[in-house]
Amino acid sequence: MLYPVVIHKDPDSDYGATVPDLPGCFSAGDSTEEALGNVSEAIECHIEGILIDGEELPAPRCIEEHQKNPDFADGLWAVVNVDLSKLSGKARRINVTIPELILHKVDAFATSSGESRSGILTSAVVEYLCTHGPSTRKEPPEPKKKRSKKPQVTI
Image 1 (cartoon, helix red, strand yellow):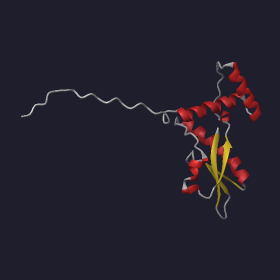
Image 2 (cartoon, helix red, strand yellow; image 1 turned 180 degrees about the horizontal axis):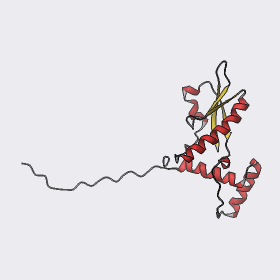
Image 3 (spheres, one colour; image 1 turned 135 degrees about the vertical axis):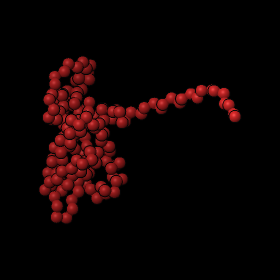
Image 4 (cartoon, one colour; image 1 turned 180 degrees about the vertical axis):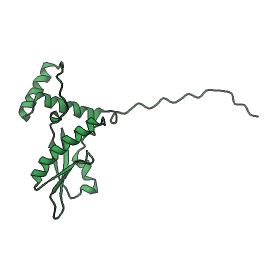
């Protein structure tokens, strides 16, 4: 799953990496490369905590949306790919039926990105849940209550 990250550096400090879509998720490093490597691990831990707590995982937004935030005005932007199959929760083997043509595409994509089939499918499911979960679904409006037509009595 891809997460936008903003890198910032204050004088006399390491490089900091903040993940705007995951409030409270950040990391640091001596260089931008080290900060990006460390923030990947921070994202995995943060997401795992969200899932353990049974909270809804926020969907990553595009960098352009975050750039409007004045807190990130001077930052350098990057996108970090996080392999959610590395979450430490117990893995379970399941039997899933997928059309053969789609499975070939999944396997080709997994091979070209250096990931496993399980990793690709896990990321796809989490991304789907982020974008189609309860907070992103638009619930139909409540039907209007019908008023009873009782005769009005004036005294």
